[in-house]
Image 1 (cartoon, rainbow, N blue to C red):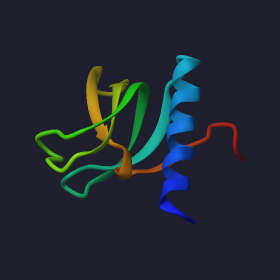
Image 2 (image 1 turned 135 degrees about the horizontal axis):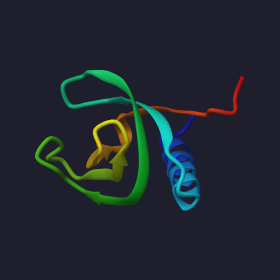
Image 3 (image 1 turned 45 degrees about the horizontal axis):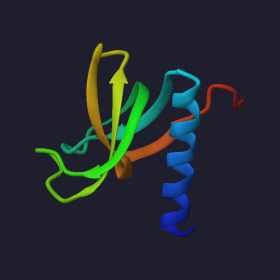
Image 4 (image 1 turned 30 degrees about the horizontal axis):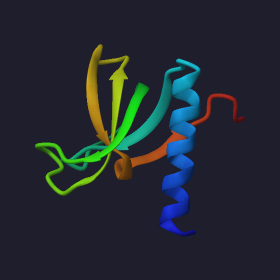
Length: 87
């Protein structure tokens, strides 16, 4: 599958769920290559860089329910969006 199609799908899902003010569960790999489930409420998606990801890329600004803080996530490191309705 084309990477662009995957990015568009993920962005659409994040925007759709964010508009519903619904926390979503994502499997995320951080800059230290640690993979964890995060419960986030996406707020914005933008092109930019961070201290941890100095090369410009798509960044998701989100409220992390477990950390009770706003965080930045690299879109390319969201491994999967966990759909609570799937069986």
